[in-house]
Image (cartoon, rainbow, N blue to C red; front, side, top):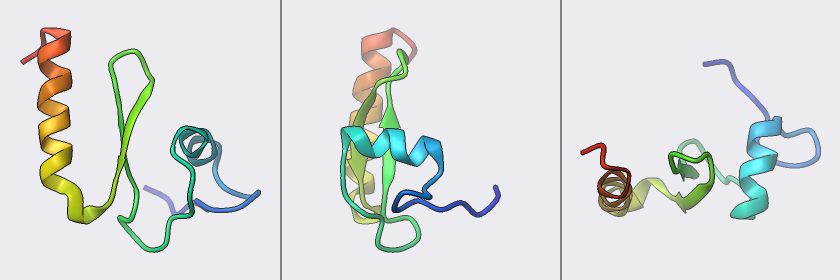
Length: 68
């Protein structure tokens, strides 16, 4: 839960990797939520305003993995 850099060349490695799939700067706290499937592949990037879409996509992924 430590503060990390999320934009630019000094960004934390996880953020740099996620943003190779879904590019763009993070403008403010909670601006970027990433969904990663059970194989470790990023499958979506969302803003805080898109939480219903996150829920729907997460439910879909759970049904695909047989984990619901």
